[in-house]
Image (cartoon, rainbow, N blue to C red):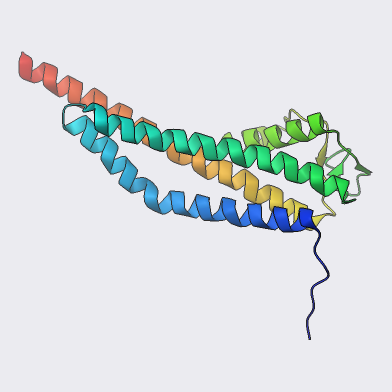
Length: 183
């Protein structure tokens, strides 16, 4: 019979946060269109305050979920270290020596993942970073956990960016059309 070793609280928390970020990310992909339709209606039907308020509440909710994911990821990383998991390394080279990071470095590491997810590997390509610690590649579970966190930010920011570009273009089009009709 296949038995799992006993899981520490930090591992359970990391697994739960990974599932939550995955569910929110997938839900965002499939429900964002309804909120986008509300924004389209706001633009098409005289910029009503109520529709705008609902749409902005949606973006506020996205911002809160991104901030909460960041804080919970940092707390989770600190807790994993407290439980003795060596999740960070001194450099990005194979076989790098594991290191312990203080909470400030963990916050910078998470910010580095956020920026890499938000800039869609631009920073990765040019080997830029804001942190002096790297993920320990030997800790494959943490590598996957960091990947989920990074993709959550990448997907969320991509959807927000596409939505803002679409709405901005639509507002410009409606304003240009109304000026044309007034002339």
